[in-house]
Image (cartoon, rainbow, N blue to C red; front, side):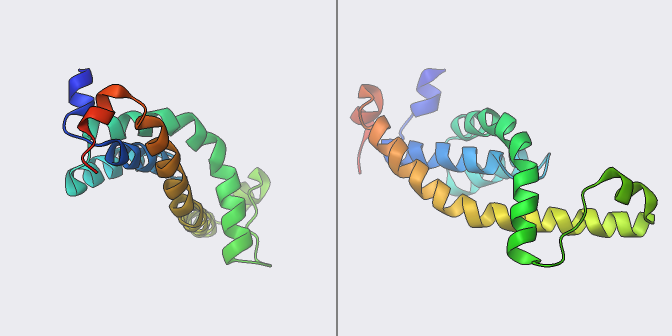
Length: 144
């Protein structure tokens, strides 16, 4: 099992794999990260078990970050037009208004995630590369 996780992968590539998995695991829309990680791993020839492990490790953080991403997205992309997240506003409005509002909030949260995720992946990749280069098994694979 351990051999499958590190087979033919350099510390830098493993760091990128883990950083992408963790960042994607924090996407503020439930149900998307697992499929997105699998597609990305297959497309970029990344280590599938490692990217999914990082994705699953991020799931608790995903739940905690949904509301901050919604608020950040509203602040960044719709200043002065803050959507209400109160239960009363959602219950007393029409169904079409509820769907439009929740869709708008989801798009704003995703845009906020994009703003944060790029720099986060770069920083995590740099930090993890430094750490993983000290792991003897991975350091032996290093061809970078």
